[in-house]
Image 1 (cartoon, helix red, strand yellow):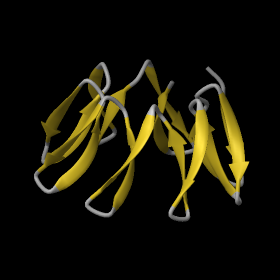
Image 2 (image 1 turned 60 degrees about the horizontal axis):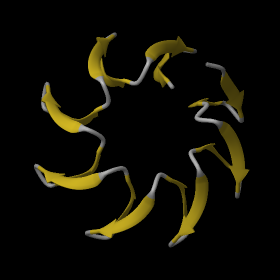
Image 3 (image 1 turned 135 degrees about the horizontal axis):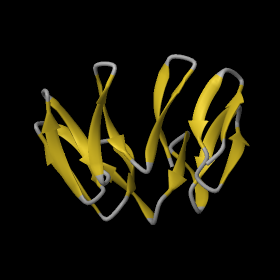
Image 4 (image 1 turned 90 degrees about the horizontal axis):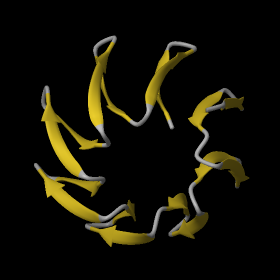
Amino acid sequence: MEQYLKYGQIVPQCGSLSDVQGQIVPQCGSLSDVQGQIVPQCGSLSDVQGQIVPQCGGLSDVQGQIVPQCGSLSDVQGQIVPQCGSLSDVQGQIVPQCGSLSDVQGQIVPQV
């Protein structure tokens, strides 16, 4: 899958990309401007404890963090991460492995 470098940001290309109010965001379905935040609209949005989060399946409050529940959650090296398929420790970073991973300009990004 292609990735784009726009305005110095490396972003996964989920379908296509949108430049919304100067932010480059993956366009997963559609976009919503919620309380001044531009967020990808994965299904629907939830305002949980003052945070606007994409609602991928459901939400979990894990150790005081509100996280989208994509499948299940893992506590890896003290980090709570959505478990999208599996997890990889790449150059000391724990990242969800959605498809494969790319090291782009020193950033490890999920290659969706």
